[in-house]
Length: 255
Image (cartoon, rainbow, N blue to C red):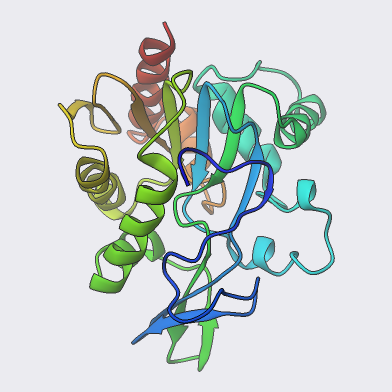
């Protein structure tokens, strides 16, 4: 594939051996990690801004069988998505109901300004030995996965397939997630260096650029407790500096 996928289900077999994978059935596993073949895409394939989560969490993955496509992405967390995007200046600062409606409309608009998806388009899960079950969320999920050999291979495949050749119009990639002590930011920077060779440089602690696109990391929309309010600057907390850095980098990327 050359560029971003169109709105809907995505045809991709890069990470799966043998014949073509069956959607939401075929899996690839290595030790305590696995992926399920269910890549999806929302919004425009020719966007100015690409917005990426890490992978479909259990709420989104569990909705695939019985939820309309336009309602799957960021299911249950769209208000947080709106608050985060508003904080960095990508959508208006409005009331909660209107903000959620804006996000709903953006997700469904296949000819608009935004593209939505995830860095790993398929569902990532980790085996929880205590619960003896597979989990699609949990502490350190992002940076721990991309820190394994299996995760590195999957991430490189996915980024090569969908992020190497971006439309000329695309100027900004917004990545949900910072990781433990910014580990996810660091690993993502290395990934972009591998799949898009160029003059990559750091703008600040949460943003980097190759002078063509700028990548900005923001708080994860499913973060618990005070993490999102702290990042938004609602509380007096040092984490708010990351929100301010993200806002500054977004403004510069689109100016």
